[in-house]
Length: 331
Image 1 (cartoon, rainbow, N blue to C red):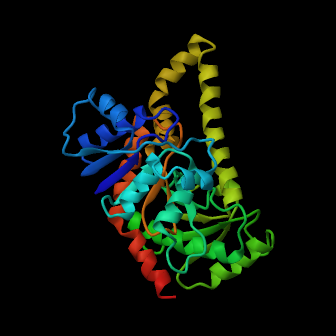
Image 2 (cartoon, rainbow, N blue to C red):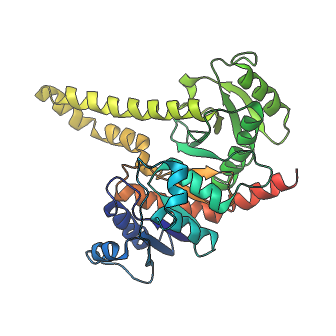
């Protein structure tokens, strides 16, 4: 699989992107990575690494979309930006997927304009893979659409099902609707309407509402919500994870007994940290589009970029988009 990488997307660009690309090709995670951005800077940094040049190429771009840039305006005004050019390579068929750790709104706007929505899909969404006690689960939308109606959530349920089925190779994934209670009558009018629509769709293995306390329990495979709720939940989970390890570190540093206990418990702590580490998953997929666009965290390091490339290559190889196009095209 060939992957285009926006080399000037992350907060520390282009260093994590270049490191991640080199790690990815060395581990055979992609057959080719095209780094898009200022060729002179990329080439100078690449010269510090040992790698097979057959597997890493550079595509020159003169501009960069910053984190503070207006999403839609920057996509229109910076057509030679590394992000827009990377997505263009995907549209042209030169790569199978595209990855950026840049401005999420701009990535969504540029991907929507360049790749287009899948026919009969009302709105694209951002779908993230989360660790749970039982295994991975997909949550969407986590930020693209702050205002939704019941029909949008029903489409998210279908898209999420297709994503989980073909990426994780698990037919009939369990789908839940995030709500303030498990009963079908709970929630606002949008949630109650979505419950009825999803429950009535024979193509969705709907198991009902799920409360926030059960999000990471692993009792479901796909969780559906609007982008406002999903983004708040995402940031809350991230914050809780950071806080837990900060508190543990503070307590461990207090006395030598705690240090000894921590040393003995290191394997367990290491496992939990790896389980909750967002860099293990690399990025979130922009779903509902005619292509594979993956957006990573702005704070991504080389390891996270490497994993985003692996994820992009795997999801492209799964054929998820074609299956989703076939489903909605038949409606």
